Amino acid sequence: MNNIHSTAIVDPKAELGSGNTIGAYCVIEADVVLGNNNQLHTGAVLKNGCRIGNENIFYEYSVMAGLPQDVSFDKQASTLVEMGNNNEFREYTTVNRATLKENGVTKLGNHNYLMAHAHIGHDCVLADNIVMVISSGIAGHVHVGKGAFISGGVMVHQFVNIGQYAMIGGNAKITQDVLPFFMTDGIPAFVKGINVVGLKRAGFKKSDISDLKQAYRILFSSANSLEQIMAGLKDIKSSIIKELSVFLEQSKRGFHRTERDKASL
Image (cartoon, rainbow, N blue to C red; front, side):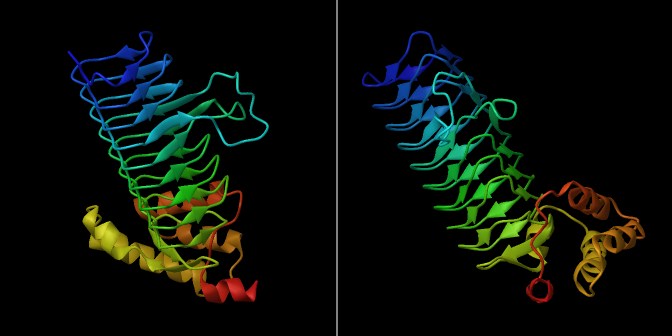
């Protein structure tokens, strides 16, 4: 059974599970699938195309599956926002549904926490345990890895990849891929070091951090080409460095470097 406030507007075609709490003046449109034990606070809106799991919380005036902010989008097209479980969307957060330029889905995993006024653009893919702080925003087609931390005021260019357990400092301007496991900050953004605190909190071992320090020296201590960097990283027999190597191999936009390396380009 669901607890639906008398002022909420829930389209009878919407599919609701059980145990959901729908607060005052909330709106749930027809093409919505809502799982179990979710909470919608006053004025939260689930628009057509929402596919929502269980135990998510939508705070006041958050809007899910708004039309993509793409002038070429056909407003009659059916696209989606899909999300898993235990995500929290604080006041005035917005998640846009996808265009048809990829697979038609903006996707979020589990246990993500979006603070007030955070924005996720169309066709983005977010993994699990990601934090987006107040007034941060990611443009269309951005992919964000598990455990990434995007600080307040950060703006991320479209098609950027943000690696797992990356830490992006407040108000940073992100125009290239952000390396996993490292801290990136500034306008323009530069790699500032290893995300040691975040990695320790996530349960990574001292040996992992030691391997990353060795990788950092290979990446940024000389004018190595990408081919030389990849060869050097292969000599480090470590799963965390393997993940870093895969990220580098898949990067299409290039990646943010240290301030010294950027100046020498």
